[in-house]
Figure 1 (tube, rainbow, N blue to C red):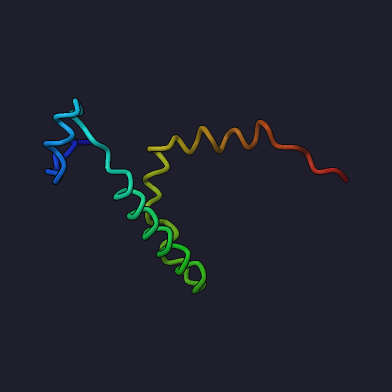
Figure 2 (figure 1 turned 90 degrees about the horizontal axis):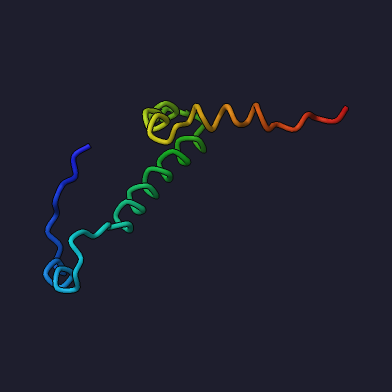
Length: 79
């Protein structure tokens, strides 16, 4: 994944403070919130048209590893 350099209005000030990088967390959070809203509205409509969109991100977060943990640590239901 390539990192894209973006000019920030406060880049010079950050440089003067000794920073050479800044992560714009709010930007990523706002994009995530918009994606969550779209999926929830799709689910609410009952269409589930977006069900498989974004599933490639399962690789990024090692989903298979986490999913296998559910099997290993699941508590058996009491009869």
